[in-house]
Length: 507
Ligand code: ATP
Image (cartoon, rainbow, N blue to C red; front, side, top):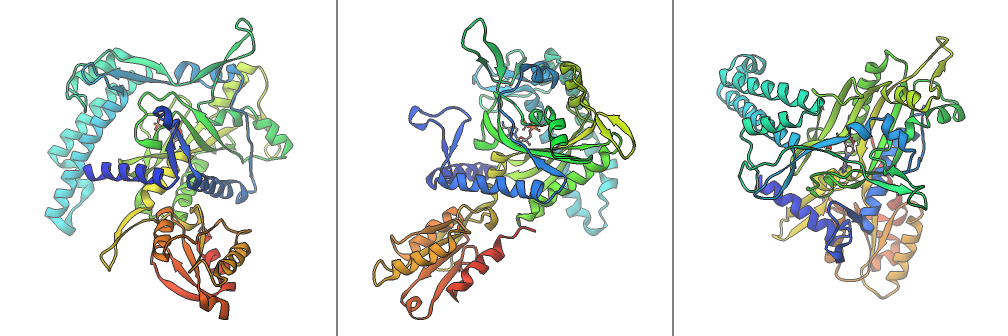
């Protein structure tokens, strides 16, 4: 575990040193859980966003995009349930003065019990080898059964307490489980209190006339309230989807772990409108599609897993997360939710406007059901950084840090280096760069030795470095070096474009 924590620290330091992510307002000692993206981070973020957009909008004729405002009518958040129910239970440890989400303390405790079960399975697998029947073991082993019983017991207390906003019951559960603060080790807790995660501000010039409005905590509502506008103006027929990327804001109680949990972040969401009764088919479809998107970058499938929700949000009839193996372990990266007609139905009620779709094929009008895919862009960024960060010992004994960012997402695709600053090499290198930069982000660099320049581009994940030397002037060939294998090849200048293009196509 210590190693993994070290890894996150290294990634944070690397992100800052190489212009990916800086703490916000750093010269004023930062602002908690808010971050700024530097030049390389901005490129990477833009590339992730457009890779998503391409997969969702460009590749699906029945999905279109919108860009709705962050400020919305306050009644929207009443209708969506966010005013009343977008709360987290918080608890403070009186000794360490640290604040926690009470439900997360209990969930972490459950994760420890689950880890015990996994350990038993692992041990048994070693003992029994090929003849091991995992299913049978899980159903009969007394230690496993005892732990499963504990888990069921906790769930049967936590979930109803959360549903009923029963804060004393959560406090009692924390006490009964003897959960201690990871920092102080003490069980000296405050009461549990509900805390609404929405930021609010006021709109209007006079204090009497001003209205309280909220910074949107999710982009989805901008899609719901526009769905008929979009359906009519784009002449969409069910099933169809609306995609959007944009900022969302949540006053998170515990915002640690770098850009995993921020107070200002960006979401990439898609709402897919379907006939009532067909939602499960589309829910399965989008689970599969989204998992395929993740592995299409070349990140191995073992890094991802599904986690089906036992406890469903107030609006959902099925929900799953795609989890990624972050340095802190497997954690939610994306949510796929079957949101029923909850949101549209609520907006009909609160706005008094009909939000029905007329389905000409079956000659019926109804409020569509919705499947949603929702991923945090910053969280995806952290997933890519965590996967990519690699420390390598090379054959000659030296070390390098290389960011194995999937080439399609890398900030720069090609770096062009003249071997020396004279003899017309910079001019030739600039000419090559000019030929490539219309199509790819390219970086020109002539300072330091070629070896140092390679290292700098390994550290930001540039898939190809092209070196121009004296031979280039004679026969129009260059050395092209691939980032991961470090293999170098002599190729003619007109081949560079197709070599790079070959690596950029997603699956
Ligand atoms: P969590 O349980 O981690 O708080 P959630 O279940 O509330 O997340 P959703 O409301 O489903 O999250 O949001 C969809 C996605 O938005 C998440 O999968 C995550 O990638 C991203 N996201 C949510 N909250 C944050 C945050 N505070 N910082 C960064 N990304 C976030």
